[in-house]
Length: 366
Image (tube, rainbow, N blue to C red; front, side):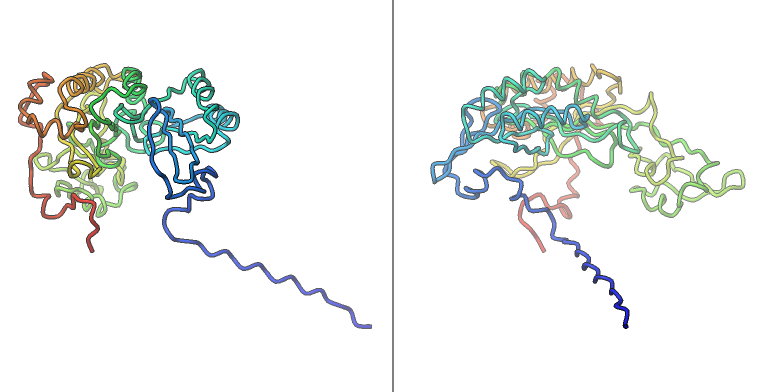
């Protein structure tokens, strides 16, 4: 009698990675959005924080936008999901500026959802000509090279700008951003708050040889201010302080080159950045205030300067002028006169060399 040997089942083929860029969003869209994809007749804003889209088929959908913090705890996420399940037919999305949007096809659900969001501390607004939520970096919570707490700066600012978020009373939309270092995440914005190191890094020579790959650190410096050195008989690095621009680029690959300092790491305000091509070309930001104290946890000096710029812009700009358009019309001297900000030779950078190698248009070049 021949024994029957059970052959092992053939192994399932491994799934190949799909490397095609951004994942397809259609499986996650609200059914009304998916049904009318690319077939919208018009849209309007019934009130601040609410978008209303009407398709050529007659279908309608309402989107309610609320402000949230970027780093959220489990309780907050569950609260938002419960609101989505109860009032928004279970469909939500997040914008690039940390706003959450709920989509509903039934207009009767809009007002109860707004009331529930406001009751739970999520203000509804951020649409049209308002101050949107601030896009920001991780700060002390997650980042490995922060010089300030970007999340805390955002919280303190948005407490002051709560009404500007909820109402559409600015000349045009206002995008803001904060960055906890000088080199990684300071995005273009109408107003940006960025850390500003004012002293070269302090080097712990005992640790450099064991922690840092010295050629990488030397190559990382944009102004060739770092070179290898032998200190106390050990391989180390040295900084030419006359060349150093205190950018902090050496700190990520070499933590012993500590540049963060409670006294000498300040905050600076930049204005006039714009990514869109609407009504005018994209623009770069320019620094208008520097040396502001990194004064946690409420940063009153930063909030006072930002509030001053916004109030002046709101009172003086023409309808639909972005902050960069307003400054271009009145000129930088008048900007400093109207805002009362002190002007020094270290502010405003009109260097034009970048025009030869930076593409400031939305056209793709090959």
